[in-house]
Amino acid sequence: MSDQRPTRLAPEVIEIQNLTLAYQGHPAVHHVTGRFLPGSLTAIVGPNGAGKSTLLGALSGQLQAAEGSIHFGRAQKCELAYLPQQSSIDREFPIRVVDVVLLGAWRELKSFNRVTALMRVHATEALAAVGLVGFERRLIGELSVGQLQRVLFARLLMQDAPIILLDEPFNALDTRTADDLLQVVLNWHRQARTVIAVLHDMNMVLAHFPQTLLLAREVIAWGESAQVLAPENLARARQTSEYWDERAPWCARPSDVGMVR
Image (tube, rainbow, N blue to C red; front, side, top):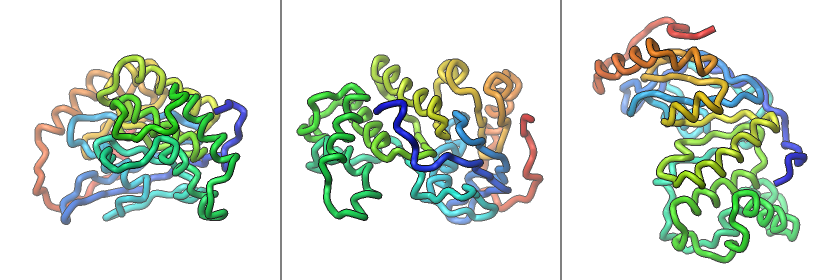
């Protein structure tokens, strides 16, 4: 897709206020307060089970807050693109690559009820942008893990959203595919879209993601990546994870603990 293709709406600040997310009445993410600035590129990192995907689910609107709030300014949740972990995709469903990509045009499809020639052109451009020229007619079950992730990125390109959420987008990918898709993410950043990604590769985060949220059910640190990923913060995150109680009762605590300013 061309760098000059405009977004539908310039992103605004995403404000999180005292957000607590819970499963069956037990908090999974505690009292998160902070903001994602417009056009920022932010990694969410932390130990396994730290609530990273849970927070992304709340940002996408798939999980309701038990307490607190998320505000997108004038933006609506339909102006947001969300890529879940690939394990949630049913690869046995008999759908072709081009049709998966065209699902990214769902806003237009709701209005016109049919796929237009222009939509197909954009779908072909999106596949070319992720290195899948000629894959339009293949079934998704015929694809490798890396090829399927490229298709899902092409669908995101079709959505043309100002806010993009990615849950472990490079997990289990070969090096070439990860590098190619990282370039797509960096291009979104150059286009001033707001991109938030759950990641595990700290070297990638330090090299390419200016902002980081370090989460261990609560905010350990949030700000410039080099500061957030300081050894003392990583040690605190590990220590916090060692004392997690899955059946912990509700708690009350200040919302700004651990913020890097």
